[in-house]
Length: 433
Image (cartoon, rainbow, N blue to C red; front, top):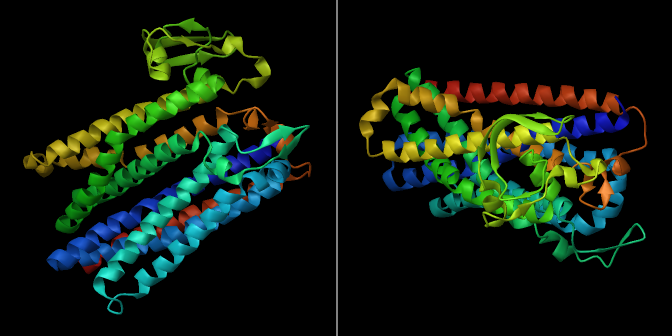
C-alpha cells in the first residue's frame, strides 16, 4: 500500500474507536443525573448506587475519550499537513471552542466526583448537568468542523490560497446544523441502546433485577426518544446532501442514471464495473421526494459526473443501507419500549430482555456506518470541491509504522476499557446483593 492508504487507514481506525468513546462520554452523564435526581427525590439507596456506578463509567470514558481525541488532533497535523496549513486558520474557532468546552467538562467532573457531602446537594447535581451539556457542546463543535469539510464556507479561494477568512461563517457553515443534529441523536441512540442492552443482560442473568430494571428504563427512555426523532434528522441531512453533494447522494443510493421521479433502492448488490445495481427493491419516485420534496424532481446519476470525482460507490451504498436499516429497527424498538410501559406483563418475559440485549451493539454499528457514508462519500475530496485528499497527505515516508503503532495502542485501550467496565459491573452487582 502507498503512504496515502496507510494515512487513510490510520485516520479511519482511530476515528472509529474515538467516536465510540466520545459518544458514550457525551450521553452517560445524562443517565447519571436522572438517577441522581431520583435519589434526591426519593432517597431510595438504589438510585444512589446507580448514580455512583454510572459516575465511574463517565470518568472512565472521559479519560479514554480525552486520550483518543488528543491523538486524533495530532494526526490531523501529522497525516494531513497540507490540509491543516490552509484549513487551520479557517476552522480554528470550532476547535478552540471545543477545547474550552472540554475544560468546562473537566472542571464540572471534578466538582461532581469529589463533591459528595461537601457541596450543596442541588449544586452538586447541577454540576452533573454541566458535564453532559459541555460534552454535547464539544461534540457539536467538532462536527461543525467536519461540516465545513463537506460545505466549505467563510473564505475566498484565490490562486490556491484561502483569503478573506471569516471564522464565524466557517463555524456556522451550511452543513453544521443538520450534521450536528443527526450526530447528537445518533450518539444518544447508540449509547442508550448499548447501556439498556447491558442491563437487560444482567436481568437475564438474575443479577439485582430491581436495580438493573431501573437502569434499563432510564437508558431505554433516552434511546427511544432519540430513535424516534432520528429519521426526522436523517431527512434533513439527506436533503442537505442532495443540494450540496449530489455525487454523495447518488453513491448512497447507487443511482447511476439521471432521471425524474427517481426510485429509492432498498438493498441491492452494486456492480461498479457494469454501473448497475441488482437484487434491489425499488420504491417508485421515493428518492426524488425524499431528496427534494417533489415526486417528479430530477436526481442526477453517477454517470453524469466525471469518474475522477466519484467515491467508492459500493462501500457508500452498503454503509448507507446498514445505517438506515438499523436506524429503522431501533426506531421501531423505541416505540415498542414505550408501548411496553403500558403492557407491564411484557417485561416478565425473558424474550423481552433477550430482544433488548441483542439490540445492544446495533446502534454503534449504525453510527460507524454513518461516518463511513460521511467520510468515504466525500472522497476524493478532503475539502469538498477544493482540495483532494491525496493533495493533503504528508510526503514523509514510513506511514505504515505509524499505523501499526496506533493500531496496537488503540486495541490495548479498547481491551483496557472493556476490562474496567466489566469490573465495575461486577462491583455493582456485589455491592447490591
